[in-house]
Image (cartoon, rainbow, N blue to C red):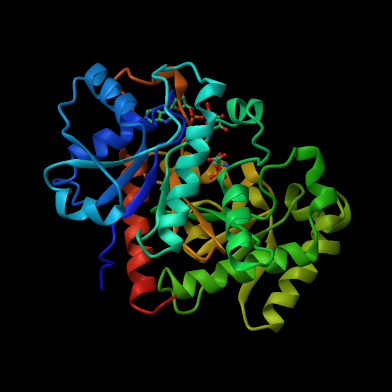
Length: 341
Ligand SMILES: NC(=O)c1ccc[n+]([C@@H]2O[C@H](COP(=O)([O-])OP(=O)(O)OC[C@H]3O[C@@H](n4cnc5c(N)ncnc54)[C@H](O)[C@@H]3O)[C@@H](O)[C@H]2O)c1
Ligand SMILES: N[C@H](C(=O)O)[C@H](O)COP(=O)(O)O
C-alpha cells in the first residue's frame, strides 16, 4: 500500500548540486516513475538555478505537503523556507546555513506529523554549517537528535549505504580514524547490528537477515599478532548476537569480505569505521547507492555523494543516486504503511 503523502526533500547546501539533481529528478519523473515529492527550498534560488541549467520547470509554491501530490505531474511543488538562500553555485556561504538547517527540520517535522511519507535529504557541507554554529558531524547525528527530542529518549542512529550489490553499515561514523579503537565497544557493535537486523526484517522485507561482521585490523588481527580488538571486542559481540538469535558471523578480514562470492553470503556488512563501509559501497555503485538512516522513528534516505561544489550549476551532475534515494524512501514508507515496520 502506497502512502498517500509525498516525500519531503530538503534542498541541502544550495551552493552544491542539491538544486541541480532535485530539479533533474522532477524533470525525469515520468520515465523514472518517481513518487510525488515536495521540495523544502527557496523558490527564487531554485528558479535561478533552473534558468542557469536551461531547465523549464514550473514551480508551485505551496503551504503544506498535501498540496504537492495532486500537482506533481504538472508542477514541482516547493515549500518556501523562512530563511532565504543566496544563489552562489560552487561557493558555499555561511549565510545560507539557517535555510539549510530549516529545510531538514521542517522535512522531519512534516514526516513526524504524518504530512510527509519520509525525508530525503540532498547533500550538506559541514564546514559552512559549523561556521554558522551547527554542531553535528552530519545529517545522521542531527536527525538522531531531532528523533530523541520527539521520542523523549536517546536514539542510536545507524548509517547504512544500500546499493544493488552491497549494504554496508559503519559502527563508528563521523569520528577521526585515530579515535576508532578507543570508541569501538562490544555494546555498540551489538546495538548497531541489532538495529540493522531488525530494520532489514521490518523495513526491507528480509525475513532472516544474515550479518557479516568485519574485523578492525589487517587479517582480523591474525590471532592477536596484528591487533587485539578483533578477539577482545568484536568476537564477543558476534557471540552475543548469535546467542540472541541473530545470524551474525565474523569477525572477517575486511579485505576479503566484499568480493562477489563473499557478498552472496550476507545481507549486510557491519563494518567498524566509516571508510571501511563506504569505500566498497561507493566503489561498487556510486551512482545507485543510497545512504539510509536506520533506528529513527521516520524514513530517511539521501544520495551517497556530497555537495560536489566543483560541478554545481554546470549541468553535469547525475541525479541517479537521488532518484534511487527517492525510490527507496517510498518503498520503506510503503512497507511501514503496510505494517511491516
Ligand atoms: N549526504 C550528505 O549530506 C553528504 C554525503 C557525502 C559528502 N557530503 C559532504 O559533501 C562535501 C563534499 O564532499 P566530497 O568532495 O568528499 O564528495 P562529493 O561526493 O561531493 O564529490 C566527490 C567527486 O564526485 C563528483 N560527484 C559527486 N556527486 C556527483 C554526481 N551526482 N554527479 C556527478 N559527479 C558527482 C564530484 O564532482 C567530485 O569530483 C563535504 O563537505 C562532505 O562532508 C555530504
Ligand atoms: N558519511 C556520508 C558519506 O560520506 O557519504 C556523508 O558524510 C553523509 O552523512 P550524513 O547523511 O550523516 O550527512
